Amino acid sequence: MNDTVFDPGNDYDFASLVQEGRVHSAIYTDAAIFELELRRIFYRTWVYVGHASEVPSRGDYRVRLIGRQQVIMVRGGDGRVRVLMNRCRHRGAVVCEREAGNVKAFHCMYHGWTYDTTGRLVAVTGREAYGPEFDMEAMSLTPAPRMESYRGFVFASLAPAGESLAAFLGPAAKVLDYLVDASPVGEIVVDGGVSKTLYRGNWKLVGMDGYHPNYVHASVIAAWKRDADGGMGATHREDPFQDKADSRTRDLGHGHCMLDMRRQRLKHYDAYERFVKGIPGGEAYVRTMLEQHGEERGKLLVALAGDPHLGIFPNLQVINNQIRIMNPLAADRTEVNMFVVRLAGVSDELNTARLRQHESFYGPAGAGSPDDAEVFERAQMGMQADVDPWIDLSRGMHREVQDEDGTIVGLITDEVTQRGQARRWRELMLQGGER
Image 1 (cartoon, rainbow, N blue to C red):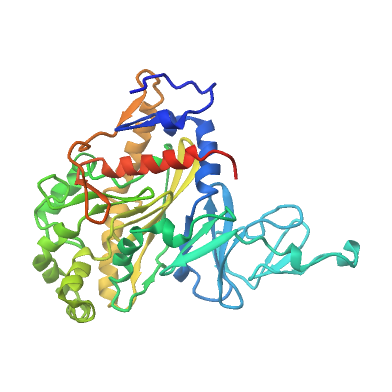
Image 2 (cartoon, one colour; image 1 turned 135 degrees about the vertical axis):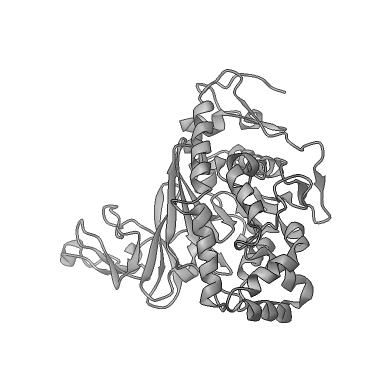
């Protein structure tokens, strides 16, 4: 292995920074590398912006980030969802200052230019000063160069050319289906607000790690074992984060990965079904799911409870009852937004149980998410040391296998997921050039 100490004064050799089973800590700490990440990853590939259900009515909007660039996801007056750059075409000021809301038009407070909800420029103050050749249509808000959606999940890319969203998602699309198909009508609703965490650490530290729960969340795991039937996704007194469990880590390619709980959840289906049927509307829900999807897939969907435990590189994770967006702000500063998901077509009581479970672990006073933020900050502090600066990702490397579908599988505590993400990071950073 190449043990050359990273020298930020030299050109970056990304191939040597990500090696087999280990990565250099500079990819988490170096500010110049972070700037290159924005241009070569966030401004080139597909990035998740939001869910169409967040803008159900005409004029509804959400302001989101692609890297540092603000975009507006808006349902226009024509009913279409668009992703527009939040930047006035005159002098560059933002035209949408609030995070969410409903408007008839976007108005730039700098010089008064006004755009409708499709992005079209409809009013210019002192229009006569621009002369007869001024093209109002050409000065509309700039749309994201590419936008596509999958089952309501809206993605955008700031690169005018590149692979399709279907090619980008690959096998991850079928995993994402586990959330949407948990609804008996095949629809989810993202209208429960957002929990936000801001931590002093790198964006690549977030999630998809089956090794940490028994240490970072030891008290939570212990409580689950004591009260196995106490909430959605109950573990039934068997720890799903130990290697003798049927849980797995899975590298889906393209940097996408999952903590694969399918066999583990199915193993305890009967106990979980009893729990669901104890909630008003639960018995009808189980019956409908089995009728619609057949016994095999129906039971799997009920057991997973809409939790694919999926990471879609670089900024989206779908875990438990939430859609999670990671916003990279600096090499050592990250914002995580967690949006609770409601299943359409189920009883209010079932959705309330989902919300309570989300709050108990991921809310501001939850038992889990604050611990994650704390450990990320400790990792970031430790990586400031540049003596022997390598981060080990080799756990389970000797025992991972390639599945029939081409995905790479390991035991639940193996770092299959981290290695898959690191490989994709290296691939994109090696492409070079700037957007």
